[in-house]
Length: 414
Image 1 (cartoon, helix red, strand yellow):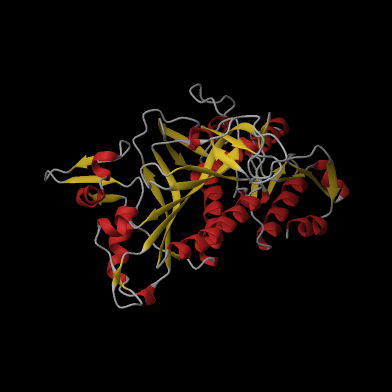
Image 2: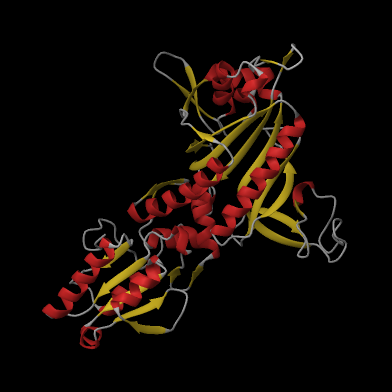
């Protein structure tokens, strides 16, 4: 992509109403545009990052045997009334049509997925089953905050599983847990699995995947020596208590942001919709149901909170909008030709490249934009590099500058 053709522009000052790093830097870098409080548009650079996060999650869910579907965001009120959510969930957006019918905007999809699966699953032979979607959610938050970490409209991967027994659900949960942790590691994030209340979704204990960040909205207690972690709201322990799991160190308190969750829904939703299947003993049974959420847009915000410096974002390689930020410096024909040739060579080798070919910007402004946007590798073609038949490269998270030839650059990027 040529930066001269990119319709978005970087900003020198962050929006005055944004205070968190993700909100400021994503706006300054041209990744998102704030439409209103809690609602953002994802621009070309931001959408490229979001698509890569989506793909990481899809790979993990597909490996578990999950089947992807896409469910509607507009829901008939009667489904929500059947589960009690219509009157009991205060963040539910409710809409009345011109025909006086009531609808809801989906803040989750248990009310939709259960009737769908009911029509398809008739026998124990059809179980277990796991289906998921990557879709937008809507919640009537009174105080949306922290940029894309907590909004009124946000995207989420939500998977729903159906089982013959509680034991089968718990075995599947362990597999999902490992898949989640594996995916977070790919992003460079260390997620702690915290026990929490099931809230509106379940009376049972749920599990939250938490990443420590100052912009987090939750307080957790965690152990630095083992995997013990609990949301402070339901904790029996307090800060500086000895870890109840390993007994080795004292518990620490921290701010964290939830990036995923798992709910043990039991048989609530199948019972709400009278969803029974033919069991192995010849009788009828309600399936045990689980829900597994992952905030895709929230993850993007958490990554920015974790990986940035005073100059801008420092994207992990795996979700960076491009692999290399190519900068052309100089007005001579030789320099222009060398930069254009390199751009075409990178594209030919299927390397994702953002080419700063702008002729009305100087070196200083181009370097500032490169640091702000945060692509992992910067490559510069200038009068000096052309004379030496080299390319100047610098990693975003390092100060060291290196001169390499085209062959070596391709080796680094391929």
